[in-house]
Image (cartoon, rainbow, N blue to C red; front, side):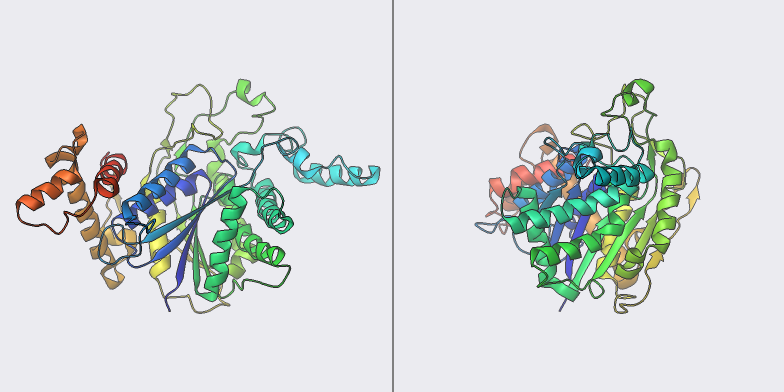
Length: 445
């Protein structure tokens, strides 16, 4: 029995890595697999999150056939994997949930309890900034706070479901995803896409296995459990690869934005996170393979001074793509297809990395550098990427899709003219609009 595949994308960087992963599925790198995808964030309105979720919906509209929404797994074709999207975000909207101080209710209880609550909170969290900044746009590189609140959010969802009152749609989607995990049991391969230099991804990687396990116990009244020592966890450890300008005093003087990630601290944030993971018992116990991915040259500026203030999140956070995100997606491919180190449940995690030549101000990548050479993976990647690029070229140029004409429909008409009629049954709804859109938006740029 082949393993069941799960992807969890965490935070803004995780969403961009998931975008690359979806493109790998589009060119046909995950034949005959049904993959459960969970987007996990603190920021419901994040622009990168919205973009990749729409991309997956677009992918599924392309695959939809008749009444089979999202289609079925296929082999040796584009869009061969079936993707099931689940969305969960920690909800910090509403009175009493805006910041840590309100959410933790440290001012409630007996006078003695209030004193103790304040003492322990002040010991770990700055009183006038970390305890009071708005949580809706994430944890802002405060990973100690983020780990606690990410765990709290998932456990709170389980308790709400047990109560059965005011269960939110995102909590129900998380429950469906975890139900698939329970069903897969020891045959689950779970890969986490996220960074270690920011807030949400770095916070969640150490606590996710424990949070999901405790969710199951609470939801089932301790009647069910997931033995994650048999399931296989992997993750990207993506260090800093982009930068942006420092927030000015005007922006940080407001209580709402009193804490903002500063990209000048990303290198030291990455170092601290990696040191923590090295000794963390949860990471050592649950994770089979960790992929250390970085950018060894000057980080790319993503704002170029265009914005007056730093975006802390929300719909405006739509960072450009970067090749490191594709490498993270390819790490997921390696994890889902590898055999080495997957059977020993007691072994510590393998840390994997590789280097490529950097000469004349450019990297000298080969296809094997992305997906490896085992089982001709590099050759497969080259062939399928080349074939999809050729299809994009045909749709966008020869048939005029780039100027608003029919694109794929024009290609099918040309095939019909050559007496190749196998594709005449493809409808405009399922193929023309969606295929042209995905090619124009995401392949040729």
